[in-house]
Image 1: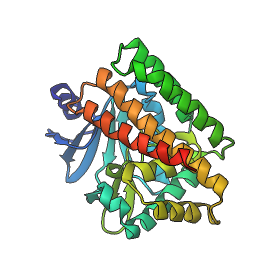
Image 2: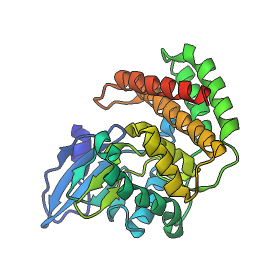
Image 3: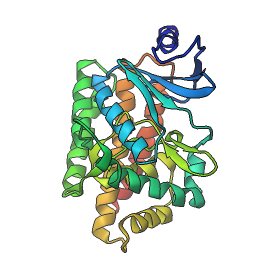
Length: 291
């Protein structure tokens, strides 16, 4: 944390001495709030994280495009290992906020703009995020790192192969791919979507499934989400493909946490987070098997 704060303090854009204040909630990067020259900023400190396929050139391109699309804060400055964004004053959502139907109806247009508008503003190379490739890569990382979860991997990968076969074929959009509640900020007038570490071209079903699974949406809300997004009645085929992707989203969050257990230096209880998401994944798989 000290090194990260010193890096944030020493960035070249400041007009005078600054005192970075830690921001809680991040489980991938170290974030600070910085006041300078009468304005306030968020500074994200972090290098590439190859084990999570996080590449900062991709995060920067996605952040700039999302800001141009009007759904994410302005990118003020970027240099190696640091990204500076305009501070948004507002309330960071918790899961129960996302579940509130009135909020959900405000969130959906933001996701649609991410999928449809952000690609029109992208410049330069960007990544594709295919969850099943990520899962296979995570399995290799866990084996290489001698994880205590290695014994689970054959069964989890067999499930991933089955889910991938159900999901295909797919429409391709530009996804955020990390729709945790804490990545939504409500300023009282609009909802902002932040943190583009994992952004990339993907199926819309991944963001929709991730939104539902990360925030505990009810089955009725999931049907509403699908009908509102696709503007048509939900068929059994769409519901099954969506549910398969939702399971894959939960498995990815579980294996992300398993990898973080052995690779992250952040002060966070990844083992508990693994257990929580594994339980969610197993419950979702049980529902999928009954379809």
